Length: 497
Image 1: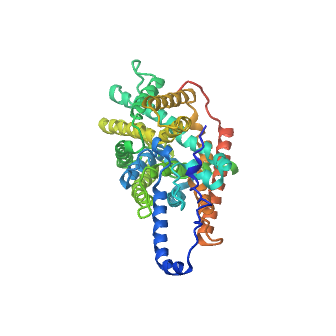
Image 2: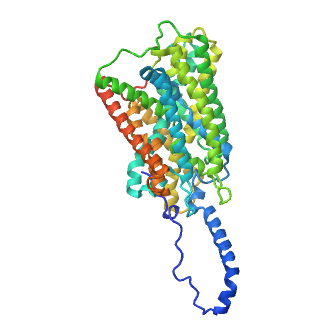
Image 3: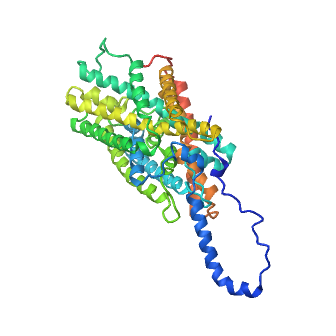
């Protein structure tokens, strides 16, 4: 359950009603002093606004997201890069199988520009004119849509995007650890060594590493970790697409669209492809949290360094995702594996011809990025757990409570990863529900909070994009349900493979 933020996060104190002085004033003094008093009053009002703008709620100083306000554009870029590039980027070529070259590139470009615009909206909405700072996506949603509706539309999606991503990272990290072990000690990457650990044990190894790393106290303290993760993510993406293109397509590859399917099946394939493209850009649920680590003032609002960091980080992200999608589709075409994407394809088709050291380095980089991404996506969960303690005890968490809550979450995520290994099969369905977080809700928030003139350019733009985002979300949910019903999913509990 997500705790409700203190009301002071949303509303600045109202002026006292009895602040009018009761001493009679002379008309002569009033006429003389007015020219001097007005500039003085404006200066005092400006200074008061400045102080209110930079004033923190006491609880913010005790929570891991806003405990430190020393962030900058570099930290924002590190966090955004580490969390923005993930294993979901390696399955982008699958979207091109259904969309083809032209529509695949157009779709990827449109979604990239669209999500960059909604990122800009969120960064602008982080600070309100009253001085309140919305350092959590849920709190901004509650401020824009009201407490009940805000929770209703964003609570489950944000939980999935944080906790669900951590669970998926445990699965990816554990599987890649096993892949690395087989590459180093086995005859082939698929070698099944009797002395090797089981998949559950590999999950546990990864979880233990992630929990140890999660003991860093706050979001700013993991900036160095995010830098390492950013370097790892850019490196493994570059290695994978460069090696795949250099090795060339394996025998039997076709870049033609599959045989035309009838009616609904074809539409669902296209919808699933659009879902893959949309899910490649993630991290909107973290942008407010990252911005919340920065200092802010009227002269230097936090949106300035935040947008600077985001711009440069997404420039690098685009330089990774577009070559992955285009080069991967050219190299593997219709032979692209549905599980693991280009990482699995690299091992499957070029495992024998590619240097063993390159394969090992690639796997190590994937593991490093999974560990660092876990820290960023888990931070909102840690923040909420500590918020419940802070709200009740009216004081900061002791070190043992903080450490225990993070061990608890790591154990819970490990349990879900083991108990529900088929969870990634539902990613299309849950991701469709969460899609408005990225493409739709920021547009509606802007309309509600900024109140642009009706029928102005910004009014039309945000209404159109918001409605399109909601429509796309509904279509993706329909396509995912249709795919599950017609093709089915393999449901097995406590048996990760």
